[in-house]
Amino acid sequence: MSYTIFASPLHVLPQSLDMPTIKDDLGGGASQYRRQYLRPLSSWELEMPGRKELLDPLMGLLQYAQGDTPIFFDGAGFAEETAPILFGIGIGSITDYRLPHRFVFIASLVIYINGAVYPNWTPLGGDGASTCDAIRFDSGLGVNSMAAAKYRRKVKCVLRTEDKVTRGRVFRSSVPTESIHHLRFILEEVSS
Image 1: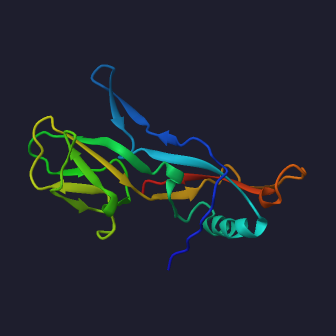
Image 2: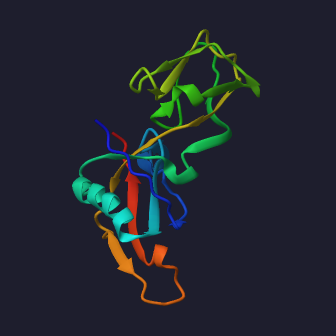
Image 3: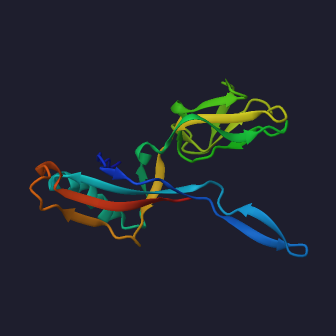
């Protein structure tokens, strides 16, 4: 059973990306930069206006999750890649490539090789039916061929508990009664 909440945020503050590197001292002080995570992780600060009875179900979900139960978020428009983004450069023998994000909807995934749509691929990972995390080409990409993709995805995230969930109410007469209540919280994408 799934629990879906529809909300209309007043503000989705800019998506923050976390792509840290690890620096290792090797061979007389030279630095080697490595990725700390396989994929970048995002976070969103959301502020929702509305009537109290419409915000209560969302507040109930946040109280249930409490920062240790993952919830899925549609990304508020930031989880859709509307132009092809680079995810691999061919070296001739590799056929499996990890996508830049997890939980990519297979039905929305369009793969491009050197700018042209490429249909001969199979989804890997994910739930195997509706989402994937990687793809397999029918043959290795040509040397220096650029693989790009556009897609929609869902975001697995947790409530950031360090920044408290805030409920508020505006007491000014110039504000419409439909939006005197508001709810503010931050969702953080998780890697597992």
